Length: 120
Image 1 (spheres, rainbow, N blue to C red):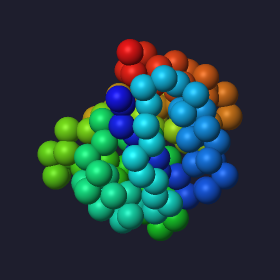
Image 2: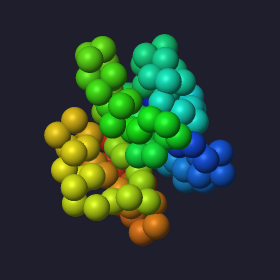
Image 3: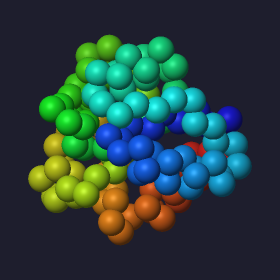
């Protein structure tokens, strides 16, 4: 079972992602957060296999979450999902250890495919 934690400041977006993920066999959503601080504490407490992480999280960003997870040596795999999918953001996410960076407006299917491949 692939254990996933969702981080997005929008409840409707989290609900959409969760519905998409739960249609994949062997996937379980083990937690959700709407801000960076709750994300870090929830991820460290739940110890998921994968985090799906939004870039914009109120006053902080998904990059802040990535830095905190890296500092904690969490070992969790992170995929970012954002409306801000510029090459510069993609490069920064990769530098901080994200395995993928997907555009919310056009790459939901690519994110689903990446998670489905992990769940095999």
